[in-house]
Amino acid sequence: MSNYFYVDKTTGTFTDELLTAGFVRLLETLLFRQGEADPEIVQADFGHYYQIQVTPALDVSRLGAATTPFALAPILRTANNSTQLPDLPDDPFYLVDYEAEKEKRAAFFTAYSELEGTLKRAYAIGDDDNFPFASMPPPPHDHWNIFALLNAPPMPINGYNQLLGQWLAVGEAGELGAVCRLLCDLFSQTPNDLETAVAAWKQLAKPYKWPDQATASQFFNPSQGKGINKPLPDGVGLGNVSNFWLLEWLKAVGFYHIALTGRVKDSDDRKTFVPAAGRSSLRARDVVHNEFKKKMRFGETAVRADIFTIIRYVHAFIAKVEAAQSPTAGETEKALLALMGQVKRPSDFLRGFHATYYKSLGTAAATMNISFLNLPGWVEIRQPDDLTAFREILEEMEGIVQQFAENRGEEIDLLQQFRDFIVADNLDPFWEFTTAYSSWLISAGEKPGFPPRKFTTHNLRRMIVSNNPNLSEILDSTGFINIAYAIRQSTITAQYRKAQGDRRYDVRYGLGRDLVRQSQYPDEFIAALSDFLHKYNAENAQVMETRPGPYRRMVQTGDIQDILRLIDKHGSDLIAKLLVAYGYARDPRTQEENSEQTQSY
Image (cartoon, rainbow, N blue to C red):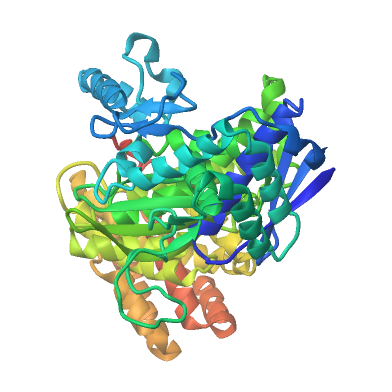
């Protein structure tokens, strides 16, 4: 009886995640075949390996007697390979027809194109309760993007089908139990004894003349694409890399079940995201992953895809916890909450996503970038109110990012700065973003159309303090609040009033950048801030003499003393960046600038 298994991390890429995911799916099936319909399988990250705990334990001694074939991912049939495939059951677990799925998808989106905007948006954001599935053609296959990748140049479908076909051949020969035992033995200890496993396979495969190696597809092994890859090179020949075929089969199974892949918007390039588990059960991860996939139904440009992957996964996690804690929650939702256990941070449940960018070369593809996107550690759920607060923060962030396009120079910089912030628990890139965003806001506000989206002060405060609780002293200071108010009144509020025909107050263009630029030296920053505040109060006094109210609040001497004290304690650079971030945020308690519209898809 075995409760624990271990999968070594050997590459530092999503290959390790695919291998582990494939083995977890195998364990799930083996437990089911031993009569366990609802086993608990918990995967935990232990640094250089994954630990997999199964409850109840798997009776490994019974595996040798198992002979009935089973499939963990389907073979893909196309118009070009249909005559080359073995006879397979007419079962979607064994076989999927690419052309039929392509036609089904086309029919769905033909009908989708005729829908009104609100229904299209419901589908795009995963709001399935408000989408008319009953009156539509069947939706696309859940794994359509994987099928599209497999059947596109450089045609990884051939290697994929060969791996799955060899697994089925092992089953037809009655050797499935022995191979499952081999894999369970391989992962029964760490480090994994791969050499012994390969030797055992060769002995078993000898009568059947089955190969022990398979080509390592770069779509399952992003660091092992075609090229000069020998660890001890004895020449410069260009060729494919091969690995033990059972490991490649597990990676293919894992890819089918957990990978999120798709074309980069407006290009033939492709991006693949693979989740990396922290500590979580298979069933809980599946529930959250399925919710997340509904929010990722359409392609995005490269940097936006990174940002939305993180935001929408955390949003999906929160949505499922909210549903489980609802008074109307059913047994399924309550069971999910139990499976999540005491996890307070989504980043403990799932560490993040491996991301790989593939550049299209026509008939080939090249791995151009490999990265890891962390889930934000500052999202921590300790009480029910936190769910609503963080959901609103994430929705606000997504709305702001939706404004930017990667084909516009200034906006790609904003996107990259925001990505650097959202994938790391570091506020420095966020200050760069808010400083640049202050200029963008005023520039965009001068153009006709909907006003640009802004952070709200309460969501901004919650996010900043969640990152660094020590900053609450600054944000709650009366002087800081009043001077940020003065900046707001002189920039985004003045611009709003100007658009409404109220020109009592001048718009201070470039104020945010000017203050941050002067903040490297405390004396220069204090002089620049004092100059702004002097002009602000003077303008207020002039308006009070010549115009009817309501009027802006004056900045008091005590406010200036407060900010000087904070500069002495925390430095002028931090205070300047916080003032700009807050000063260009919207106060939801006021009616001004609150006319922002929900962006449509």
